[in-house]
Image 1 (tube, rainbow, N blue to C red):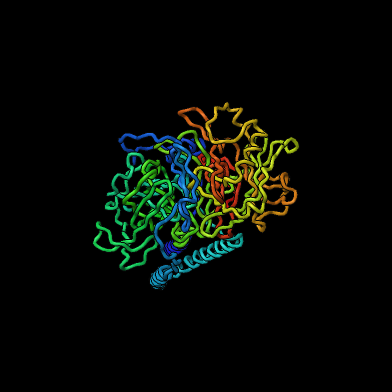
Image 2 (image 1 turned 120 degrees about the horizontal axis):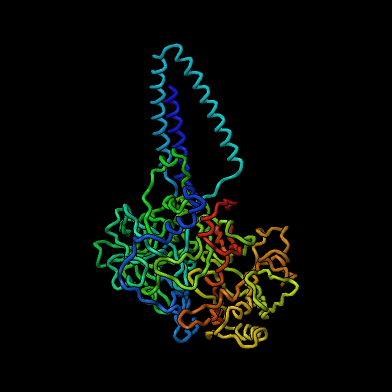
Length: 617
């Protein structure tokens, strides 16, 4: 009887855990199976070693100034709105999606979990009946012994229930996934693994200015496979791949169209870029997950077996499959321009839209918070094998990255992520942080743009734009202050600088309107990095974002020179691109309509190789 009771308890406990896993996700942190001494080496092997997905084709080198850096051409704005391109330089322009699609409605949860629960209860009832028959046929002394043991088991169960209640009192746990980002040509990308039974890797630019996730599929003609990290996605090798048939279901990503390669109407979507790039794709669905080991697909473990062995699902990059979802994406059949020569194979849409990658995760219950974080670092060069350059946290933010408090700006946009600029400063003698090394010696110059003028600017935070762009109307004011500090006018010509000269260049400070409910009143605005108390006594609790020269100056390996990558070129509005985000963990919190900024070295390998496991939020 004791054996049967224990087996029953094990079954119930396992079902409870699986039920939790089906609704929640778990934070991916340091692998528990790796010892302290060998952690760093082993994890680097997981993320950057191996031979899978490598090809022997030649790899053309793309000049760094030809990075994939296209900004969206907004609907309703003609291309005459755009400033002329700098000669010989192709930069990202505003993207325009050339279709109209209804917003995806959030799916309601079905009753599958209740059905599983009913089946379990029936099985448990049958087991109870068998146990009763066994007890009635037992000897009297065995009955007494089993009764005592059963009472002990019940007492143990009560103790466990009390412990569970105590854990519940501590508050809900918000599951989130932590994964590596890699450096492309000016942009950052993440791995996604697509299809079953053997997932195929695709690398996609993480783009907070796009809605759709898309990458080339087999059959895409002249789509740059020789430039990309991976082969095209082979749809015929995935048993879970499906093209959306718009005759029987509604299009999520595009419009219903007849294409020659299909015997039925399909959902077709296109994206066009002002600098000439474009792509076309059909809407499809397949199982995929982001992150995990860089050079090998994960084979699913049996979660029940892992739990019974005391393993904690989600503690390792090996557990990324826990976050898999059935994803609607664009299966590209045609691409042009810079999409052909970029390092990553495709793009990951991360706007606040039902079509975006993270929002589909949320709508399917893979994460339970409408938020994610991007932490960008930058390496001198990028390799095809993968150059680790930061981290992405889906479902929240990981405070272990933060060297300063997370401070929140108000998000003034709906689907994209926008902030309201209130002032721009240049700080003499540089400095990496928003807080100067010596507050008393700090010399800060406001470039003198009236705040009411800035209030009319539309400034977005776009991870898919490499550089930072501001209105052309401020160029003279910016240049005059720059000349006052450095002795020469500002322009975007390459400069020959020593390391000391680079670090001595001015640090650009952006004063941004805060999300006031999120600002801790106990923080000292003059000593807290990221608060504006030292530069604006009237608005001391605004947010101050630092952009040091090491972020806005781009080094060319070929010329051994530095080029300023902040442009005063826009007719109105602008973009805080990846080089502004660099050195920060930027938290896109749609749950609370805010954008958080915390300074960080974004050292993903250092974090997951560490032993400490501090707070997560």
